[in-house]
Amino acid sequence: MNVIPEPALHCARLRGEPIGALPKDLYIPPDALEVFLETFEGPLDLLLYLIRKADLDILDIPMAALTVQYLEYVEAMRTRNLELAADYLLMAAMLIEIKSRMLLPRPPGFEREEGDPRAELVRRLLEYERIKQAAARLDALPVLGRDFERVSVRIALEAVEQPPEVNLNDLQFAWLALMRRARMRQPHRIRREELSVREHMSLILRQLEPGCHREFVTLFGPAAGAPVLVVGLLAALELVKERLVEMAQREALAPIHLSLAHGADA
Amino acid sequence: MAQTPESLKRVLEALLLASPEPLPVAELRRAFEDDPGPDAVRKLLEELRAEWAHRAVELVQIAGGWRFQTRPEVQPYIDRLKQERPARYSRAVLETLAIIAYRQPVTRGDIEDIRGVTVSPNIVRTLEARGWIDVVGHREVPGRPALYATTRRFLDDLGLRALAELPPLAEIEKVIDLADQAA
Amino acid sequence: MAQTPESLKRVLEALLLASPEPLPVAELRRAFEDDPGPDAVRKLLEELRAEWAHRAVELVQIAGGWRFQTRPEVQPYIDRLKQERPARYSRAVLETLAIIAYRQPVTRGDIEDIRGVTVSPNIVRTLEARGWIDVVGHREVPGRPALYATTRRFLDDLGLRALAELPPLAEIEKVIDLADQAA
Image (cartoon, rainbow over all chains, first blue to last red; front, side, top):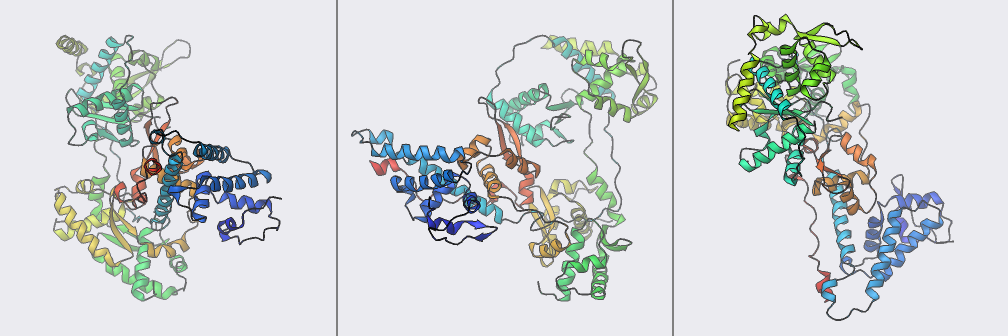
């Protein structure tokens, strides 16, 4: 029978209670192992745990020792017939690869370019650790509905909704736009969109809320120069073409208004 | 929080401000680990009501319990705030309206031919709900599609005596030609 | 109501108490027939905030504007009245949220690279349903994966004015240059 390295069990929790260390030869019920493994969010989390538990220097990881330990866990999972996630196997392969690369003698002069084979792993471990901490700190912030509530004082009366205004100019220019479009409705080559246009498309989309209208120029802030406005306009036109956004203009030179197209958020 | 009358009062105030529904005294008492009893709660609610007497929000007792509500005097301010910035119809709605106004009576198919895109039922519904267009008949072709036209109300709302007062199309076309020449 | 500073303040208070959503200064000014101007409104809001300092409800400034909200100390009382308490998010959800918050805009692939595991669509859906993240575009690579970012609602719900107010990411312990160390 495979024995689970004992200290690991300190961190396993069953319904919030830590599972104490179990004697080495005691039978470990499969679901306890499952619970233990579920406390890890994946191979990076497991590796971090192994490193911190053994008090290893993350900047100078003894790859041989770490790989052995990691493989023991993976083996334990396998023999328990736990569904072995591909993510864990992939990491196992990566560890073995790094370990073997470190054993290879490196010809002088090659070290600099190739660097330490562990560098990428360390970078990922550190990045993951930062995010893990950030997640814990986020969770500690007060959250609406959990730690505080909004107020909702009743309004004595409800206001009547005002329907939009339309005047003759609106109609005239709607027609004008129609005619113009009818004339231009001929096959034309689609230009390759520039990235900046796409970027502005997102920018516009995210500022539009369902049912609300926004004046085009207010989407870019007062500091936006002509180039930004031009790209913004191209982006807005593209969104209109893709029927994600609707545009309205009362008359030539009047402010252009944008709103989300009906169904765009579906 | 220690349960001094003052802190109890502050908690009651917060509970009532955060509740969208009126809260009866019995419900309010449930919020406390040590029930202060109905009389204490009622006394504190009366004190709260007095404290709020000179504000634009008042604490009132209604059938369902106690609740805070705005005083009628602030309603004009709330109305101005709630009033959407003059909403406007989308291009699709305006174009559909223009087509119906100038080419009536038309079917949805006609509108789609002119606009070059499908006309969603919502657009037609919006204009119908506004009372600006209605069905004036059906075209006698397969499927008998409805024929739409503008209404009296449309003319009234746009300050027209008759459709003839709509800007003439010829003029509009001229504007396009001028614009195209300039380009 | 005459527009004395005191009456203005009472109106602002009522407007904020009646609005479930935060109100920016520009929005609040729209409520008045005679615009008191941004500085006057801001000054009155600061006074209001001070007036409410000793109550169980506070006036806060967040991304979306100004909002009254209950203080965390009264939450136990509110919870006793509530039918159900919101569930805490799992670590998987929190880590995904942290990656989107600190590294936005990111694709699901980016999240998987950092977490080292597959990200289930449920996790993303949970955060989208809460209104905390949304798709702000697509990365122009094969498959055009969606780019996720946090929303203003996320900031509002966490009582923040801007992303910069999130707890700072831990400093990377040392600048690592293992290549140099090895050399």
